[in-house]
Image (cartoon, helix red, strand yellow):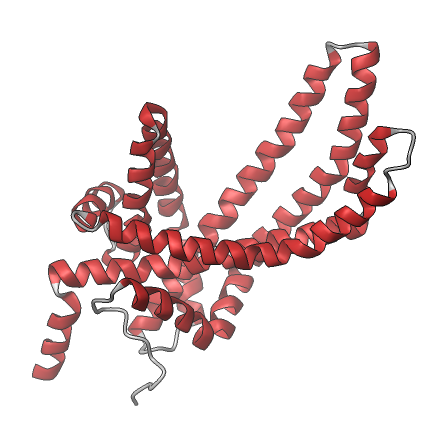
Length: 295
């Protein structure tokens, strides 16, 4: 039976259509889509939230100890800074794992959506996500190293590589290529279309950032109010007590979770870009339609 709400991925689109269809896909599939992300990635998001709670709880104590170390033992400040950067490193590690899990889940949701004519199979999405997570982790580490190396050389090569590799995960999922073939095909697919891809990702990324900041507004307002009440305090280090405030911590955890979930919107846009470029160069969707008519 034909699904009238089905969004065709395998066709050419201009910039406006890619952006509008990205949000149309979210609007028409948000319940099943975010339900899959929460069920599969939820435990990792909870882990990240716990790490963030401990990080913020220890933040106030670290700054208070730094103040004392400056007065009594200046050399002790290096140990406290090491502790602070250790927490930051752990938070970044967990955040990277969450982002990779969201990326893989999103892409396999879309693949199942396409294969089942607009009805993604949750069991299929979950199986493929956990089956291929290590391959994506390896790809992600390699791409980060390459982009960072490009940024160190002259910064601009890093930007160029970041846009090229924005298609890598889609290529790996929809063409089932190895890591090496995925990287080489990314350069071939984006050839002559780098600026178009860059423009779409910038616009979508800007819109997603605005939506993400909405989650941050309650925490920012609460922080301003609390800091306003502390202006008359004699001890300036008391300003860091806000990092122990349970309400402030809860609002920041909400912002943290919301931004990670919204980050998947950019991934959806990258899939539309992938199919647009693939159709321009390989006519995959057109050939499939012709074959289906023949059958």
